[in-house]
Amino acid sequence: MGGPSSRPLIGVSSCLLGQRVRYDGGHKREAFVVEDLATRFELLPICPEMAIGMGVPRPPLQLVLEADGIHARGVHDPDLDVTEQLLVFARQTLPGLSRLCGYVFKARSPSCGVGSTPVLVPGHPSREDSGLFAAALQAAFPHLPVEQEDRLRDPALRDLFLERVYACQQRQHSRLHDQERGSGINP
Image (cartoon, rainbow, N blue to C red):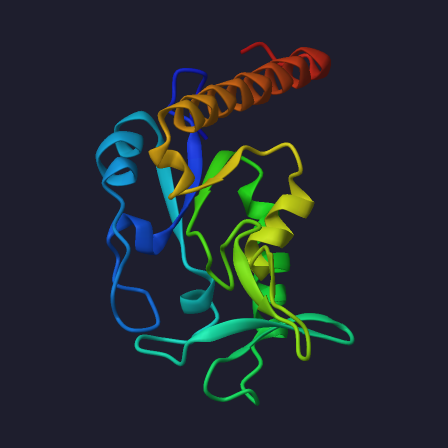
């Protein structure tokens, strides 16, 4: 664990860093993330679909609303359902992410989109919701600053995200300091 002068830790969808982890073997390298955020923050790349062993290339996924909730199913093979694997990955991973001060997700991703991922609703117009991992992270850490790469292209939204990340880091340091004082530990 770093001290108060360490850079804030933020999670990032791996494809935004130029890692070739997308279903088609490509990436979605985002210059702002690689060239700016990497100089300000410690970046933690995560690709939930790779983490559950889907590999590259892999069948593309889509979100589908079913009677028991939203599922991540294959676009070309609706029998492919990785919902449970993604949810298990989230449950196992989220406790280790408590140091995060922010997260930059890939827009419209079935695992990482934030309110922007198309959801197929059989017999009805599609709607948009969050990807399964993004939704789980936001439920676990409701005050964590999260943003999508496409929205960070707006300078005002980018500045707001940066402010929120630094404020989150400050809250974490204050909480740690209070815990140390309460336990009698001298920093």
